[in-house]
Length: 519
Image (cartoon, rainbow, N blue to C red; front, side, top):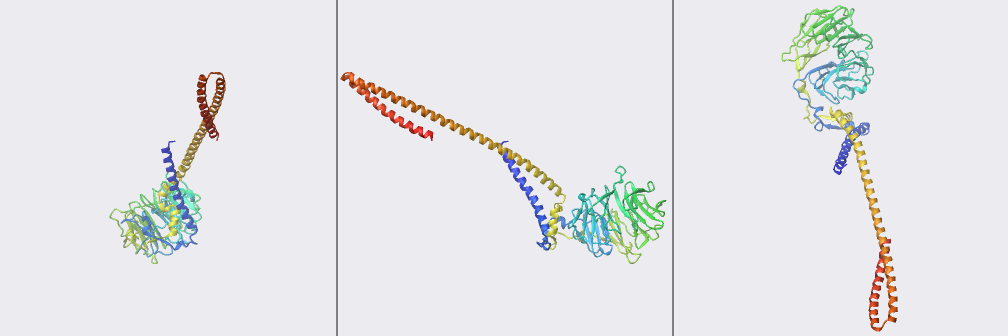
């Protein structure tokens, strides 16, 4: 590993750890705050809209596609409308509207269901699962998805049992799911066949007295008489592809089926069917007035019809869409006057309301009444914001990307840490070897110096002995030779004496060097 690569790896390791720590810290802090929300009085703190993302307060579209409508069973003035761009609520019969997003992670609202016993409990089916509000839609605190058993989150319809509010059915593109405990746990109760298209459940309907349960699929209609435990395919070959269904628990059972080929009706439990010639187009919506079951409403792509006599005769209501919009939803709010219920028509381009049984219609612009973020009065509770952050809804679809990045970052952090530790160990070992080699070389040099000093000391001693030997011979020469020669001998003696002094001085220096080398 080169030093430059080592430096790059170290920087990567440091910044990856920093980013992962920030992400984990955000989730940890939000979780701690939620755990101590009461002791810290966080419910009293609100965050201004200007500091929050637009998705919680802002929606821009002139026309909204209406996908589902639900009405409070105890108060007909409370209406919920689900669109492809959010959820709306009116508390005055449609006069004014409020946009609801607090906790809704997905604004593609496809189905709505209100508990018959507790109307403040509302379920919203979306393309990402089912959301639950227990305060009439103000806050959406629960989200049912794969972890709750809802393996297919592409919700197409929702129905609550009218007498058992804890029993909830969800139609998805992967089958029919049922919950026996208000949505906490889900089980697949109808899987169908993928090859025939029966797995794609388009709608769920109870009969008028909830004696039977019907589902419509691309492969036809299936019926269950035991709450969804067992299913039988009905009327195979007798009906075209179903779009809607109404079953009245009369004696005999009356059944109305809206299909791509128009309206089919049976007055004998489906043994025989009558193809009604009115209308001559696909029937998308069928409704029965619960206060007068002989009044039946039928919706096509462009028109709405009513029958006062159980489907024998039909009258077209004054509803026409001429700007290319199609009727996608028809909802009835019973009235004290049998002939004048409130009708709500949801189209691909807006919402229309008739308060006189369909004789006249008024368009409601939902987008025009939505609260805009620019208003300084718009705020969000801190607890809700912490919930959004902790559950990942605040980050929207990017939460999966952030989790993936954090996971990959932690893995990279571990491996880069191992790599850096291995490299540091290698460097330390290399330095230790070099240090050991340097110390050995120093010892060898000192030994060489010591040996040299010893040799010099030994040689100086030998030279000194030789000089002493020469001096002894010169002394003998002085006593033997004549005076002239004696002078030469004395001269030589003086030189040898000088040499001896210098040798003594050299020996002293060598001894001092020897002591230093030994130290």
